[in-house]
Length: 314
Image 1 (cartoon, helix red, strand yellow):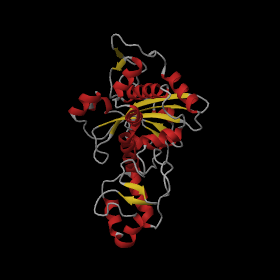
Image 2 (cartoon, rainbow, N blue to C red):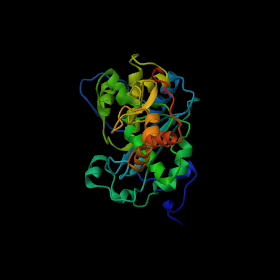
Image 3 (tube, one colour):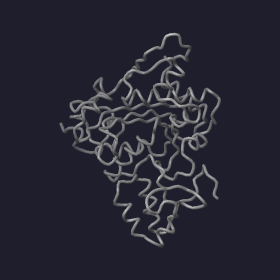
Image 4 (tube, rainbow, N blue to C red):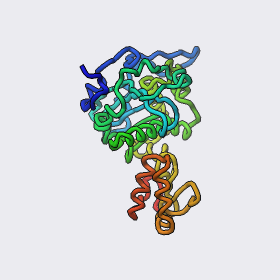
């Protein structure tokens, strides 16, 4: 029998079916209860919470809460070791998938100390390249929720770029409860769960636990009645004004797309193309995000972004 990572896996059920040891698929959460707190019922299932989110937001596309664990913090040099995502559809059907991934590199001890995933855990798991096509197909056309999702999005986009499979987490609405907290009040993910449930999750920094915690934090935020109840409005809150990529390297200002770094900081893409097109080649060779490179590649052909929906076209 061939090892799972020896060939591409094109079926989502198969993708998340083999080698499901208890360290890979966890169906129970564990929380530390803070004495003397009054909180919402923390025994409510993730499925019920996702269905409440779908009903509250009146979603028209699948909505997915996603989290990854990695070997480190660099999209260029580090790799994903675990992915977990839970999806709710407009008809309120819910599915959850979690699995480990072989990063084809050692996991640093300092990183293992954070998420608990070891080299032995991933030794016989498929590589990202093996699962990329099926994973992309399963997530394409979704909107996303993720806590500090810029990190997860950047890691996923880098992994997909290395496999030449188009990433499904670009050109889509993203809701980031971390930024919603910054809109309401400053909190960590564990603090956000404790705020509404009087608990802090054990095993934080495992992807499946963080997906569950993100769902609970987000539904708690919705219940404050202090936030708009549409995907697009929430996306607009969590995306810094005028940013055209997750890192704010290219921004919309003064009616045009402009660089927000380097020697041409503040100059429009069209101006740079006309005066120093070689600078675009420099950017494309460097460690920039998939979104930045897509915008620059289009600009080389004299095609530029339109105003994002969350800013005035001025």
